Image (cartoon, rainbow, N blue to C red):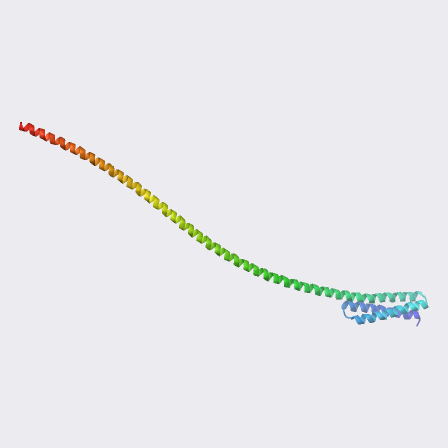
Length: 207
């Protein structure tokens, strides 16, 4: 087996190793130690390929050596894939933790706001009841005041009406007294006239 064919087989194995490393890192099936081992093997293979190319320059060895370096870079990139997945998992965990903390804060705020709202409603109900009681007392006082004023107006009206009627009765009684006195005087004068007439008639009969 020639040196070119040997490194061609090594290159093919390195390709399989790089593919396995990338797949294992992507699926999180390979640990850090396995990736370090694959990296060591790839470094050794790439170094051997370039040493062989240096000792026996040729196109086939150059292709194999270059391919081994590419496989080494692929295996090294598996570390980046692994770190990226771990970082992504950490970010997801941080997001979930932040969401949980946010939910807890929201729930706590909701409970506090609910308590504040209930207390505000209780105060509003108490204030409403107090205001209603004050309004009832004010209305009752207003009704009592209006009733007292109405009673006073009624009393004044009755007193004025009674005084008016009394004045009218007294006026009529005074008129009746005047009419009675006038009638008495007229009757007295008429009686005196009748007595004079009777006296004159009696004197004529005697003569």
